Length: 90
Image 1 (cartoon, helix red, strand yellow):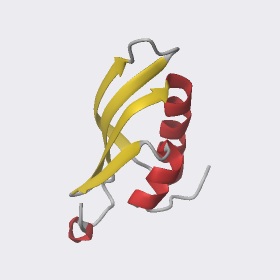
Image 2: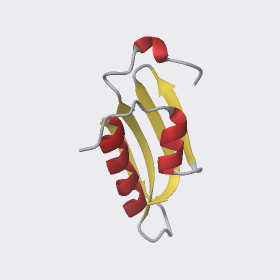
Image 3: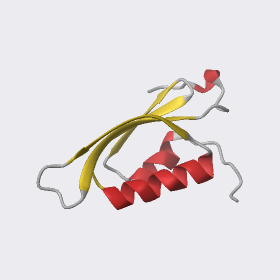
């Protein structure tokens, strides 16, 4: 098992790629990706959950028209151990 590392926006940006929009909302991260391969999203999500102990609390996923197994994703990844005071700039 991996040791938990507190997540930050830059780490999630690196996991989900430059096309992801990451914002902080209290103890959670909102991640919006307009186009990503489903397998790449799944791998990045698994990594975020394993490394940062994040839990998905909301998900909207839609297939991308004309995409080859690509989806658009809006999700919220909650970090119950993140201090509420850690809410920096969005």
